[in-house]
Amino acid sequence: MKTDSELQRDVLDELAFEPMVDHAHIGVAAKGGVVTLTGHVPNYAQKMAAERAATRVKGVKAIAEEIEVRFASDPKTSDDEIAERILDVFRWDVTVPDDRLKVRVEHGWVTLSGDVEWNYQKKAAQAAAGRIGGVKGVSNGIEVRQAQPSPWDVRERIKAAIKRQSALDASDIDVSVTGHTVKLSGEVHGWNERRVAEQAAWSAPGVTRVEDEIVFA
Image (tube, rainbow, N blue to C red; front, side):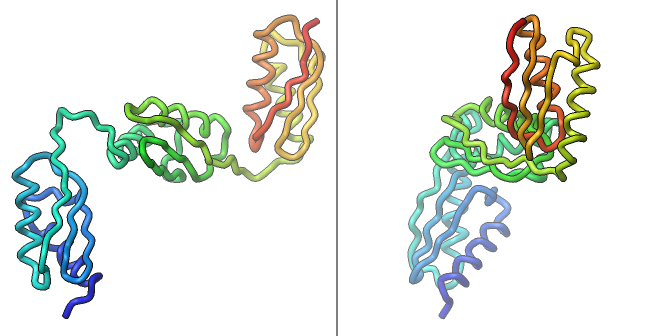
């Protein structure tokens, strides 16, 4: 007599073998000879073909049919479809290192995990996921991880980036670095200059927090 796991594997294999069935979105559970089919297919014919394929497997005593028919014109808002679309967007977005990220979707809520080298990559992944239809919210658990340069090196990189901006006088901005946190202070003449200083700070490797204490002259 087959175990539940053996029966489950045999049914999955039979679905994969059946040419009329796109089995990628079909799930199988087995318990005491009762097989439950879940997931979705693009038409009713595939739904019936999946049921027939499962019935052919030796050891199947009963079928619980829970497969949904989802037409191509239907909105792609199920959790698995949302996850697939997010992964597709990640693959096309050059600012997102998709090979280092994981996506979990539960009732339309997206949870991102993994690690990146730059804070802008973390933000880009969240923005890309949030644009997908059916997404109710995004929890961004991506970590920024990079070999941390010395505080002096980070400070010099930020000062150099500020100096390259013609709108700013680098001597008016003070930069201090503690761990992954950068603190900016000093004086600028407007919001745009303050924004330039912040962007320069975020561009430094390993920075996960920027404390902006810049004031207007």
